[in-house]
Image (cartoon, rainbow, N blue to C red):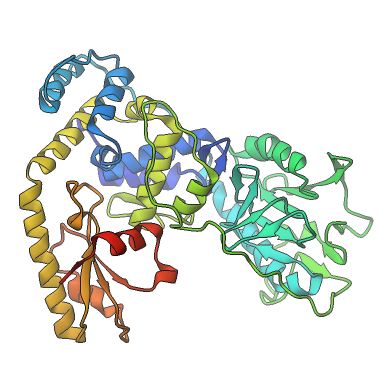
Length: 467
């Protein structure tokens, strides 16, 4: 039996049964597409494409052995080297019958309607926000309520003392939140988020149902949401944003003569003059914390600061047999947070036990030959530096990352070259480096402290090796 599905099957499973591209923090867990089922499905899709080795690199070998034994009810030998323990576990898993979990995240064929409506509302609100005296924030912007991080389909706020805008999130309740329902994902919007938004003081909450072609308008009255209806003109006017009118019927109209540059669903009846946007505070943002995930056999709570620092933009793509979430570091970070969410004893059940044994064997082999691997990588780093100097006349160059650290290289390691000089068409440098070694990732980083992550700054300060 094949341990991993072929690439064609992985693609079909992803395109037909993928969770909604939404990464949120609810009750200390990374929630994907509005449900834990979506989180678990995404974790399996990452593991199947990137293989067990990708996860194995993120926690100690001893922790994985403990989790593998507990997850598959195996007997963990009391003594022996890691390799000897793996050999004994391998003998036991021959009798294990692996049954893949039935994970259904929703109905993928309906997602295009959701995206069309979300795009329409986003474009209309962005065009009119200044006139209405408010701010409009898109899908990937986070609304922090307590220790939770939500990414509604649309956020509108006026900054009237209940919230504070930061670079990567809005701390506190927005004035108006819109969620567009998707088949299989409705429970969170109608229950979990409904309760959180109500308790936190989100003044208006709209639920748009594309299948029924209807909108539910909830307004906070004495701490409780009450359902309201459009007026006799089929317009709804939110009290949280005076002067703004919404025409729900426009969501369902297919007008071939419609001008895409004009707002379709929203209009401003009482424009506000001289509106000034609120300045954003700095606060936690992508990369502001060192990436040190606490991955254990049992679930571990994810703090909001970790979520906002590690979670990438929810851009899901399928490239060369792997699910990519915004970038390679972004995929690694999401994988780590999903392992924290479920714990390793639960996560190992998503793949056959033999895949984990092979992944652990691969890690042990790499660590055994780490000196040889690092010597080869140093040669590649020097070759890359020579090419950069020859093509772009760069002066100062250095190396950071696992190559300069005392611990062994791992699955996620790469060669990161740092340069200090600015040069035109820097994107061409990646073409120059692309064919050095297809099995080794070479990254190029300009030293601009304001754009670097905490990990990159820490490595440059303590472990940079000049070339």
